[in-house]
Length: 620
Image 1 (tube, rainbow, N blue to C red):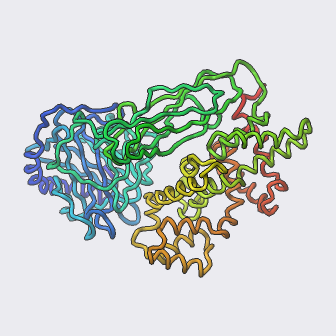
Image 2: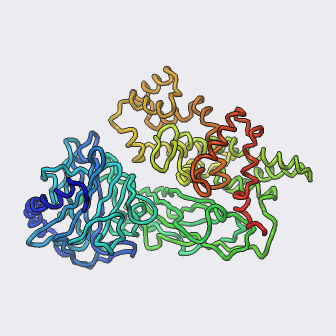
Image 3: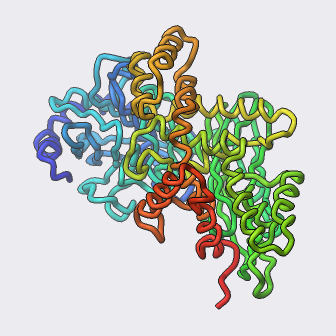
């Protein structure tokens, strides 16, 4: 139970009033929660096997909101009836100056029975804007004390009788049956982070209509239009008729030799594929190491109507370290569109077969390997034959001249950062973060986090090989689609609410970008946004691609990419603890006017023990 005076008051002295208000609703709802004619099957073993939190909406009543009230939805995913009498609901409230929590218990002399596949809707406080909710099984908006959920960061927990929510509980060992952390919450199920924060027109919904539960706030929930379901809604037991389509890995295990350089992972879609649908893929673990064995991946597969197979690549590093065969664990999550869900084969393993049989020279000293690795580290793709040959020869032309080879290796490396392909993918992603998102915990100085950068750069550059036929149009299509998605993200919407006028939106972006727009540029963007000639995404792109902003950010981005590209980590990740190293190199690069050669910017990274150890275990 919270130590907050308000929370304690609601939990104890207001509990009887909550129960009294709820009794009439429960008496009506009980005749709606009739037994399903089919037995429901609890799916998965990661989380609750009975009741789960299936939907949370936190923006009720705000300007532009979808509904007038915040709400929490509960779902019975088990094959048995569950009596929720005396169960509790833990909520993080939005209050000033800091969020408080409340524990509310539901009490009825008749019981609160939820049948398999049935939902229960709990109405909280709200405001005047948006649509009214459907009939709520529990209307807590009548409580004199406001129960508005914290919209930026919060936790909702479902508790057994006589239990309380303490710290970050381990499920089913503390009486906490299920909980979800969202937004900036530090308490959440699993190790993958919190679920996204609900937006004005989006709630967080549990995958599979409530049936999925892998025990992870981030992986179990996705953003979608709110669809509050109550006791009158149709039953949706978890063994009901399959959803229209399923996403699955094509096999439970994929195999690749380390020397192949890449592994293609196939994902299938079965059932009704008449509508477009998407599914995310990511790596969740395994024995392989992302810095040295493969290039991290995280992205979204977009299936057009009628498409049944798509794939993504995992780039492999042919290191010289003798080691057992290693594994990469992969997961499909957050399906959207076309009634699609993740099927029974939503997880799979990639086995990387080692090809080393004893000590060998470090392959990073070989020009072909060196060039190929730069394609992996900076462009997130396998090299095209002509490009690989060009950059390999760029070093090999020096023959045995060690000084020449060192200079050419440095020039080759820097050329990847300065290339058109990286400037319009990775550098653009970097500038979008810097131009729009204020610093938050974990995103120091508005710099993208490492995995965010990898995910977004791969999305913009997907399928692009500069100078191949059609590459410019492909890159433009990718960029437009990515920007449209970027401005819909909850953190962007939180920083730039829909209620902002065109002038306020442009001015706030310009301020975040350091005031790079001239007065005429600023006025033109405001006018175009007002007239509908540009979208919010288009304005953001104009700011991020502004010549002065790009010039200012070139050196900071160059230094950050030394860490992201060569060391595959953030500047303050281990073995570092802060930005001391990053600041040192940035200051040095600035002192030499951005001349990376005179600043000796590249050489220390490509000759460092940390970089070289990615490709071979040092010989004692």
